[in-house]
Length: 118
Image 1 (cartoon, rainbow, N blue to C red):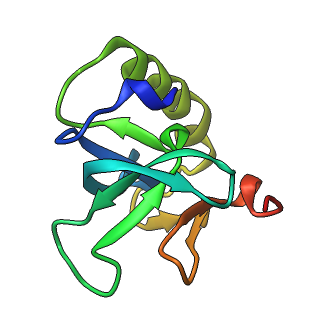
Image 2: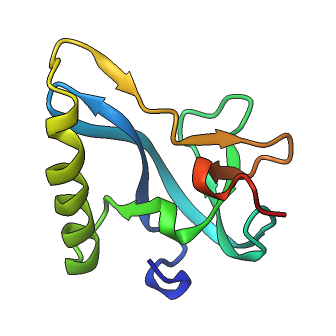
């Protein structure tokens, strides 16, 4: 997703795995634009409503999917991920964290494909 696809106040999810035959992830609120250092591109500062050690993190927009509105782009992306990923994880009795993301010591969420970045 491009940076401009999101705006402050949007409810989003960073998908983390599969549980019970569905994708699951961390739901957050978009707060403000923020530089995503690992990709050296525009990102978004997000707020985790559950708080904790990393209440605020910065993520690249391609890591995000809308929760608060049903936009066609996010729905197409979500359906494609479901079609591809869910059949790979048929054990509906377990929560599977696919370890696609990690958080740096600077509270930057990074996809494993981007870890070799800056």
